Image 1 (tube, rainbow, N blue to C red):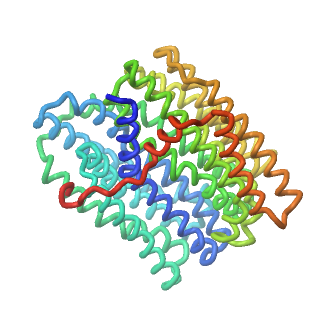
Image 2 (image 1 turned 90 degrees about the horizontal axis):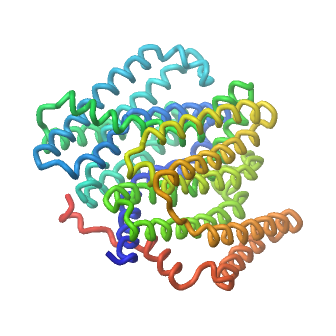
Amino acid sequence: MPIREPIKQLGKSTAVYGLGNVLNKVAAVLLIPIYTHYLTLSDVGILALLEMVEILMLTVVPLGMNNALWRNLPSKGKLGKRRMIFTAFVGTLVVNFILLGLIGFNHRFPAPFLGLEDNQSYLLLLVLTNVFFTFGFRFLLSLLQYEGKAGSYIIFSLSQFVGVLLVTVYLVVLRGTELQGVLMAKVIVSAPIFLVASIAIFIKYISWPSPAEYVRLLRFGLPFVLFTLVMPVLSFSDRYFLKSFNIELTDIGIYYIAYKFGMIINMILVMPLQRGWIPMMYKMGIGEKSRQYLRDIMFYFSTVGVFLFMVISFFSEELIGVFAGQEYLVGSPIISVVAFAYLINGFRQFFMAGTVLTDKTIWLTLSSVSGMVINLVLNYFLIRKFGMWGAAWATLISYTLLSGLVYIISQNFVRLDWAWKRVFALFSITAIMFAGVIFLQAEFTDVRQIISLSGLVTFVILLRLTGIIGKKEITGVKSLFQRVRLPSLHRNL
């Protein structure tokens, strides 16, 4: 298969099946003005802590089933696939009901650690309820992706996106329900979607569940829980430490909003690409042509990633000013550190190929545990001394060390040539341009926007003149992030 064809396929897969994640994150950004205008700074801080719990739980509750299904379904016949899918869904649903039920029954215990008063502890129940419903919705999305049902995938994703926006506006802006309304909106939207998803799965895949098969799926999938748990731990554990070291909830709220903007690069590049890339990685294997494809895709990712990093960094104050307001402006310098951390983390999805495709997932577990331990230690010492800045730098250092560790481990199993010379040249020019623009912005504050735009144009020209990007790279990037025509819905429902 020609090298450009898989790139085009990945571009389409990324655009369509990354849509759910993109819409989810876009909704979070679009809701920032509501958070900052209708919630107090303290409530925004509490929301940050509750979101930490939600993201951590949403990472754990799938129990690695998606990865286990992607790996094992191709070898099954029609009846075997039905049984495996239904076993994975029902088994995980039961485990989640028990796990979340136990936490909910004792919800008053963790409430004080999240800054909740006794009369606010019920907010944690809303979070847990939304986590349970969201699992079923995401499980169905994964199946729709596997079956190539792009139309249905888009409809479900759009339904959640529009629903959360409209219900949040109604409850918070029109009804004045404040923080409770933000959390209740998610439950109101996720409940009917969960019901529809469950009915659809039961109708199409109902069969007799196999406990033995579920255990086999767990054995493969559980290591991925720790691997995927890395991002939530590295992204959100800092909020717990900020609270533990008596950082004001108002400051946590400022950090939370700045962090949201830093995550834009994760929202529109890293996660959508991961959504399309990982299933394709399983299908392609690790042959010689696949290695060339892998190397090229990583470089295209690097090129687009550093450009997005500079856009976000150069216009950080403008983003905060427009979406949040002047009282949050103090957090704008943190955006660059967070954005670069997520750019570095994006390389991990490529480096993991050597371990995943040789079924050495236990090493992903070990690297993940190491990364989380490093992050917790860094958070403790850096936040204790430097507060919000310490939290941001702990995230960057942790993602850098973790990505490096995954790279070293994978290279031991499958030695890949990543063409590091041109990647190093790309990042060198990026560093020079970034430092120059930030310096000039500080010196000439009245023309910040002109300096930013000039810096971006100069950056692109330098990449072209130095030959770091040529016609091949431009074609590759266009193929990867081309405008994708949405599939005909009636053919995919």
